[in-house]
Image 1 (cartoon, rainbow, N blue to C red):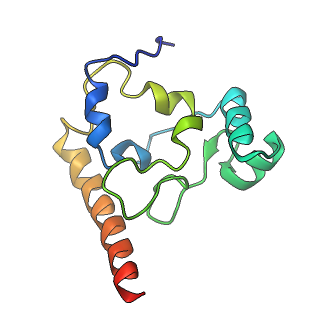
Image 2: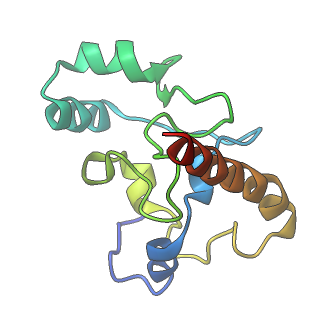
Image 3: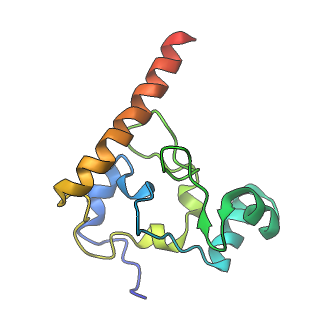
Length: 131
């Protein structure tokens, strides 16, 4: 595994990203380790077992919402959407692995993800107007 580099020249794009990598696409896998589960458990002040029960699907990936987004992704925001950013899995922290983000350079991926991001924002905006 590559060492996490906070000063990566590619990480700056993450500050303004609406969370493209937070949507599960066919063939993509988020691998959550026991260490990640323990970090999340401490974040919520619950047991590792409770984290697995509430948030983990299968053996080691997060459950997702109906639109395929991570259950911790906050709807209605255009950036800083991770609800557990400080406790997020190592794979999330390491992305984009000191390389250019694949979502920014792939029209095919953006065509799949952008409508989901826009729908998330629209649905939350409409909900707040109805209140």
